[in-house]
Amino acid sequence: MDPLDFTGRGVVVTGGTRGIGAAIATAFRAAGARVLVCGRSEIADTDFVRADVRDPEQAAALVTTAVERLGRLDVLVNNAGGAPPAPAATASPRLHAKIIELNLIAPLHVAQAANAVMQGQAGGGVILMVGSVSGTRPSPGTAAYGAAKAGLHHLATSLAAEWAPKVRVNSVVPGPVGGLGLDPEAVARTVPMGRPATAEEVAGVCLLLASPLASYVSGAALAVHGGGEWPGYLADLRTTAYPPQK
Image 1 (tube, rainbow, N blue to C red):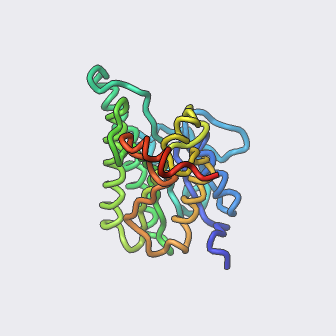
Image 2: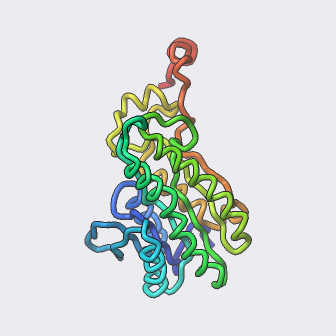
């Protein structure tokens, strides 16, 4: 059997209408899964629920709808998130609260509802948190976002311990991803792989972690960051002693 065949599986992707979320939803569909996405703007030819997952009632309703439409819930991908750049010194308390609510509290709401279903079904389930390298190193200009993602990574480890063995919980930790407003040349100067990730590459990691190939992987954070970032103080060394390979 193909371990990456998700035929008959039910998958929910929050924030699944664009960017990384859309790529994740597409990858699971291509692997045979039935996929329900949620967001604020509906897109054509997609099984969609309009939901603000910051609201615990809407988060619970999303999971209920998923079970009704898909018959079961095998994989939840908590992808919804993001934040505008904002200096921590001047950003409003309301903005900080909303960023943390979207990137940390909302995934917990949806995960709680999904766990209640997965614990009672044969085969349990998998929950994936889409984090960020912003939660693993200083994140000036998006401090609340980075703190929320750090909390999300830790949340995944705690839920993995509490909800085992029926439910596996892991984090996918992307670095720079192309098509999200980044300067590719700036990324190339920083990331050892010399380019941003594609959304499809992040989606492939989600397929792997949700599959039987990762059946003993829980509480892990898998970095998808192209080797990390060269420290700024070593920039000269990189260009002289370790020039990029062609």
